[in-house]
Image 1 (cartoon, rainbow, N blue to C red):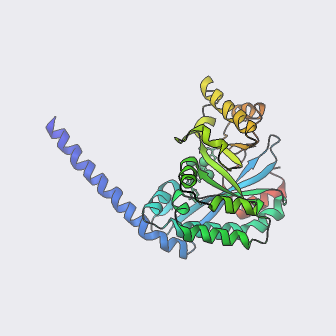
Image 2: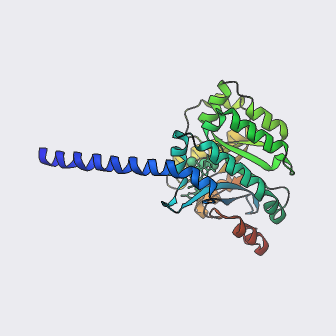
Image 3: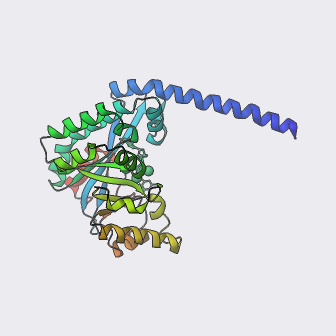
Length: 278
Ligand code: C2E
Ligand code: CA
Ligand code: CA
Ligand code: CA
């Protein structure tokens, strides 16, 4: 009825207003978060088929005095829209470089540490220069560092003739395509891309066992990666059944709650000492 319709309309605008207010609060608090130690990095292990840790993905966390815990899926898009993402990326980059020695000391020099870049970072020469300088002055082999980037962002940068990734690869840094399979890019590009790793999106991993077709897609991605001599990493591995399937099909790396949640550096380092992850 009309009465109902009107009631809903009022509710809807109220919700929109609340959403908008929260977005503005998040946007205005991001700069403060960067400056005042409200951000932290958590590290999630990536393991091989024997369950041995091969590396970690750095994932940002924000515990705000004003807003409480704000998940990255909420604040990263807002940071991108409000041009604050570059501050965050610089902070992440700096923090990863600071944490690297402790991670290598605990898990050995052969591990790899990944961090996420936003599509916006690639369009900002100040950010790309910052990253290049950081990698140039790294007191550790740059091949320890991997950058995770979505397909579409990589493709856009590729078409724009951006040499950022080539520069990084020149140092020995690795490049991973994140959330692989969810983008719109044509598979034929993969042969032209200079990348090292494909990360199979959680949406495919989670379907293993549930549907035959999703298992097929995952299997196909793994085989294609092998033909292209790329490392393949499956995200969001939660069950033994998923792990068995992936290992059976020779997926190189597994990442997910089954092997470990993202945890603070101190916890990750303590786990190595206990031999928990290995
Ligand atoms: P992503 O890069 O695809 O990261 C994987 C997400 O899956 C992480 O969520 C991780 O905690 C979660 N995850 C890992 N294993 C499992 C599992 O077994 N099950 C389930 N359900 N989830 C799992 P998180 O940490 O909340 O990050 C969400 C997204 O926020 C990331 O997705 C990434 O796009 C973005 N993000 C996180 N940290 C950063 C950062 O430092 N910089 C940028 N630009 N983006 C970041
Ligand atoms: Ca990622
Ligand atoms: Ca991902
Ligand atoms: Ca994702």
